[in-house]
Every structure is written in C-alpha cells, then in structure tokens.
Amino acid sequence: MTDQNIARAAQFAPLIERVHGAHHPELTRVREITMQLQQAGNATRTSALFNELRTVTRNYAIPDDVCGAFEATYQALESADRMQAVA
Image (cartoon, rainbow, N blue to C red; front, side, top):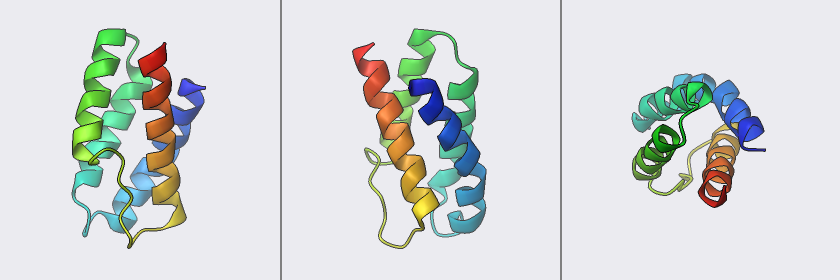
C-alpha cells in the first residue's frame, strides 16, 4: 500500500506544484522528495525522506486555499509515512 500511496502522490506532485507553487513554494521540495521516495529502496533513506517531508509540509497540514489534488497528495504521503513507520 505504501508504494500505491507514493505512486499516487508522485502522479499529483508536479501538477499541484504547477498550480499552487506560486503560493506554496514548499511544493517544489515536496515533489523532489516524492520522486526520491519512488526510487528509494533503502529503509534508512526512506525514513530520512519522510522526516524531511513532515518538516516541509508541517506534518501534512492542508492549507485552506488548495484543490482536491493537493489534499489527495498530502493524504497519500501521510498514509505512506504512517505505513513505513510501522513496517
């Protein structure tokens, strides 16, 4: 399920960066981390990426001025984060 969540987030990350990036510059780093998570096979590396992601997103806080794709991306990343933490 973590892989599906990461894949979903990776699908939306470039889109939400393009649409919301002017008001949410952190989305560039969110996209970069999401792409790195897709390629990461190392559990230690994955953990470090999720740590940074929690910081960048303020624990996946969804701003009031965003679309459903933005919300879905953060929810998918948060789900993947929770699942990797228990794995």
